[in-house]
Amino acid sequence: DVKVTQSSRYLVKRTGEKVFLECVQDMDHENMFWYRQDPGLGLRLIYFSYDVKMKEKGDIPEGYSVSREKKERFSLILESASTNQTSMYLCASSPRTGYTFGSGTRLTVV
Amino acid sequence: KNEVEQSPQNLTAQEGEFITINCSYSVGISALHWLQQHPGGGIVSLFMLSSGKKKHGRLIATINIQEKHSSLHITASHPRDSAVYICAVLLNDYKLSFGAGTTVTVRA
Picture 1 (cartoon, helix red, strand yellow):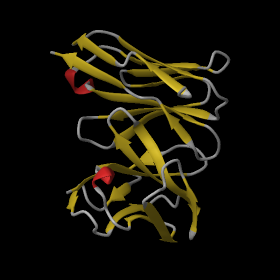
Picture 2 (cartoon, rainbow over the protein chains, first blue to last red):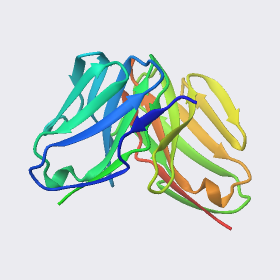
Picture 3 (cartoon, chains in turn yellow, purple):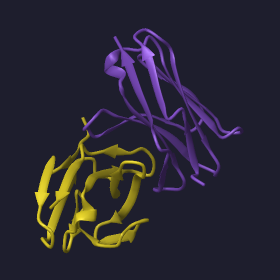
Picture 4 (cartoon, chains in turn blue, green):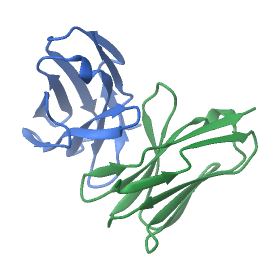
């Protein structure tokens, strides 16, 4: 079975902390994505990467950065966590078409 | 206006009933996904469609490209089908645009 694995299911962090969310895929997919999901707003694209060391801003990149040093791993970084970044974060990967999603990380910033 | 509109927003059914969820979109697409999310869970891709119809178990998905419309049907619904169902359209090689989701509750 193909897999997208997110390192943490639940995280609680303090305001101002630097937070790393990790995502690993085992399908050799070119494209990887980070989304956040909020009630009433649905899924919104934060960043995506179409190749190693390549990244593009999505719809809501403010307050986030990403890193893709290896093809299988795509990290989302919150440089200084804030309470408005409390959300469900979903990683996904895809070849040209077809998506596989991770199980999600529910991040709470207190 | 959202590029992807789903209806209904919420749906409650009795076990065994036939369920239909609709998705309309306003842009050109290369494919359409139906996704399932159980409470507190991650997202599972049920179908990817670019034309016609697909069936998997009790789930059937159809798409009419000319009318820019897709439907997801659940036959003989079961309480384990209770979830949020999300329609998402693939706008180009990578970008998905999501509907707001339909919350389905199936009562025993």
